[in-house]
Image (cartoon, rainbow, N blue to C red; front, side):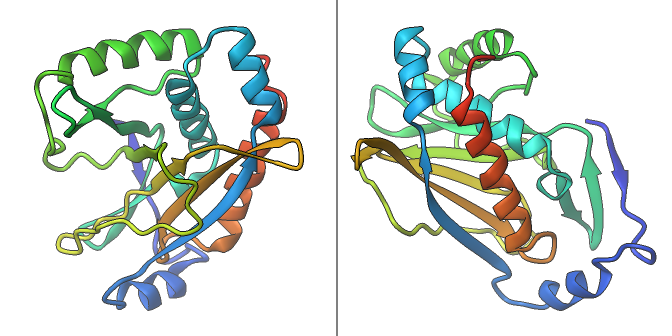
Length: 212
């Protein structure tokens, strides 16, 4: 787990960090519809699993933005070199389990790694992360609902600054396939600008998914 400490004194976000760190609930959430028309057509033609490919793309996009790799740890800010997806898996008992897979910047290799991790938790439900592990992206899907808003439970003591990424049930609108997608961030580390950058980067990938 490679990371570096942010120099708080020279950090241009120092005042914003201290301001929002005082809030009792400093998280914010933005939901928007992604256009997945090209992506959806591509994965159907190539028999690529929807959930794993979206998990890969969501993680790839997050790794390209520093604010999505930054975490608050004991009052200081660190920036991970790489963050990995920790996602939910529905088990046969209709209870979900947490599952973590290493992020690999190659979809075929990532898929194999993730599928192996999923197989291990399918009949062994885990609902806790490793203590102190924060190089994560919490990812889940709610494929039964095309939601328009979203909120996640947050543990505030100690501070939880891990981003939450969620998508819902895709739907057709004016001949285009749309996917509701939610991003939740700690406001001490990021603003709407950074979430907007995330959406724009992810949308660009979805419109040209040939590298998957």
